[in-house]
Image (cartoon, rainbow, N blue to C red):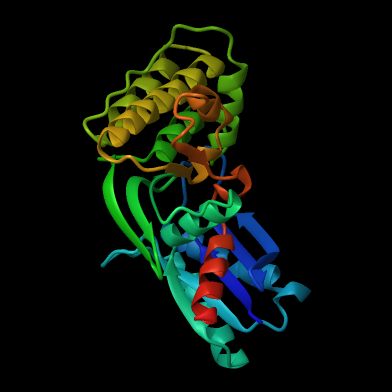
Amino acid sequence: MSKILGIDTSNYTTSIAVVDNNELLYDNRVLLDVKMGERGLRQSEALFQHIKILPTLLNNPNVLGIDGVCVSTKPRPIENSYMPTFKAGESVAEAISYTKGVPLFRTSHQEGHIEAAVKSIDFNKDEFIAIHISGGTTEVLHVKRNKELNVNIIGGTKDISMGQFIDRVGVGIGLSFPAGKLMDSLALESPKTNLRIPSKVDDMFFNLSGQETQGLRYIEKGKTKEEIAFAVMLCISKTLDKLINNILKVWKLPIILMGGVASSKFIKEYLKNKYNDYIYFCDGKYASDNAVGIAYIGSKYYNK
């Protein structure tokens, strides 16, 4: 028997999940509040919001009677990976562990994404490539799942993330932050347009700050929201297309797309049928930040 509480306090989402005997029992998340026109939150403000939200999420019957608690304490499973917002979840997890007398397990935000992704599509390969595309991260990862996850970065952005590119241009055209879902909808609704933002991939690495600048220029030139959203999402889709093509030249492994940007309907439509034997999309519900993967990781640790 193992009922495990998972906690994740990423930069923009407070998340709680409970897994009971390897079955998801509870999943609740709250997006942090970002003022209209702002492109994000300072770490101190995000930390404060997490502290306010966590007690509300924990006040649920599903959290009672837990056997252990698992928490993300850093963005990535590498040395010196650090972000203050994760201290909110870690402090609460430690308090629960001490007062309830249950074991505490620590993991990383990225490992949580990987575990949630594979669970969401019942993926059982032991070795694969994960493309983590979100507001804070755009990385290509070589993943091995044996007794523990082994994750190595083999590619990704050299400057801003795909999520930052989308959000910054989205806020520029008047959308609220985070702008991903609205940008995706606008791009899908856009009438046929020749507006383009060039994409370029060097092996498994690329830059996006220049593309952001081009998108903001289109705003100054008076292009419509739909046209700009279409150009941004098409640029990202083409970048992923080139990236996947380059990955498969070196790694003949299945590829999972995960993270908030991976829930884009525009991207899925663009890549549909191009790499059927290799590409897997994380279930959209578990693509964005969540504590579900964290809880599953804790369950694995507990059952060891």
